[in-house]
Length: 262
Image (cartoon, rainbow, N blue to C red):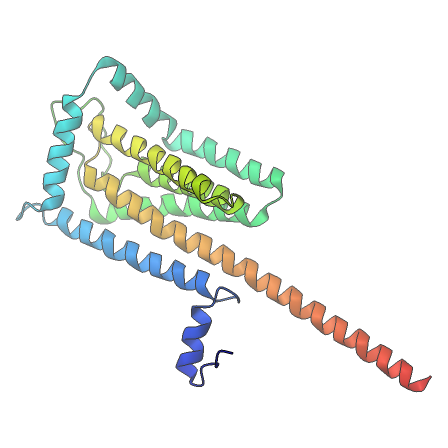
């Protein structure tokens, strides 16, 4: 039999590491993912904002990946990349998001519906605020297929796609008991995000660092949303359980009192 921690700190740590409870392991994991995402995003942003004085690894990645993708250009590949990028633009992602919300409503899974309604609009507002915080100009290249006047960092298409496919993958993983199936679901979601990000670099409207920062940003935000909704669900379940327990105790007390008078 395990001894319960006696100190307040010990009880706090045990509660945060417990898979049960309203504020248990799920909350700890969500906070850790958020902190990790914030740290990685900060490292990328530091490299990006230091472009005028240093040539760091992120700038080498931007240059080399752009050169490689542009060297692979063919009419068929360009057409495919245009289809991918337009399907995951503001209109495309909005339609896909509404369809996902409709599906969750049809399946009667309100917490997943709430997660989607919070994650997608909130994530895009976060992305827009970051664009105006860093104000990074779009790439300038003779090989660019598309040109845009808006800010580049982080990529909005990639951010929205990471949120969308991240939610779908999280939902399907929760339904799938098999490890192999879960791995295939995650791999498919990652592939879709990679395709969207690659299309943005291929078309010349983003740097690779814009794409990486967008993925990290959205992963952090999605961790916040899923953790918050999971905590809400657990709190409501715990409140309902306490209410039922109190009701059962009152009923038993009433029966015992009635028996004592008979």
